[in-house]
Image (cartoon, rainbow over all chains, first blue to last red; front, side, top):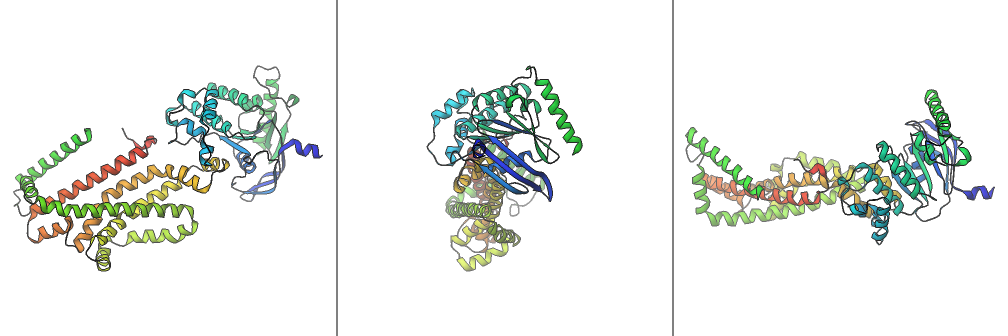
Length: 245
Length: 250
């Protein structure tokens, strides 16, 4: 039992109530270290609220329950969302170093440059965000997330505003760069969820249910044999959840 | 350079219109002097205009700087404290409900005929646009940015000075530009009510002696001050908000 407890980096149990309505009823979420967990569900079911709850942010409703984080560092989380949230007056490299700037730490430009090189934006480090395309800006946001060096990365629909080609490029880049991190991602997109996740959770009927993946391994490509089988299954579940809601 | 050229062109057009009105309406000089008479008066009364203009300029600049500082401090106070919002906001609004002309004699009575009653008038007139624009700017931060900053572990001061205030700059710059246009009005109203120096005083002095040309000359000098102050403020705020594409209209 204690072994099981230690294995979980995050465990959340309880009920989420917004405007006197139960949004999530007696749910239980356990996330293992170094895995990519995706929460799927339609709009307004409480996916983003759940993510905020884990991060310790202000949520619009009430939560009756416990959030346990087996803390690794002083700063536990980094955050990536649909909007890149780059500060428009800071150039790219300073945006990557934003955490250090805000905490009045010594700026590590060398590390920031290395990360920008990884996201293939090193030669744009002195430019302002407004000169970059949406895809480029999201790559800067990814570099900023990695710069924080936190064990847990929370992602709130991070790729949903991108076009298909850019999205698939940044998805593979994220998969590569966030290897060994504990990632919790919220998305609408079942394809994205199947490609990236070890664990797939669905919010249906105010409950959090798990969609079993083969050996808890992500289905890395849509060309993989069992992709369509799991895609169909996921879509059916989502549609069912939509009808029942 | 282009701006100066534009300014000369616009001024010339205004002078031509003025001349045309004078010429075709046949208005006598003691009601509407022609531009050449006003220019001659400016040359003849060069020292009188210059010495009084310096006083008004001093009042405008000191009032503008102090009013801006007060507005910025109030804006920050309003954003960081809920109690301040409850207590101060009604008073700030109330301060705008009192006509500025009604305050001028009281301030002169309290602070005397010196520059301070005019400085305070200038401060009062610019305080509202600066405070409200800055406060509104500080409020308009994306909640997602607030979440990100909070997760990054930023301190309150760091968040205020490194994120909130830069985000508020475009909004504040609108308030500062309005203030630059209003500041000379505050100083002149103060001088009208009670003073022995300044362009406002010179206007009253000239009016009393039916020296309409000198009155027009004073107004022109005041207008030039306003244009210069506005352009200086505009230049500084444009530099500070260069990153904001919404600050520019092609």
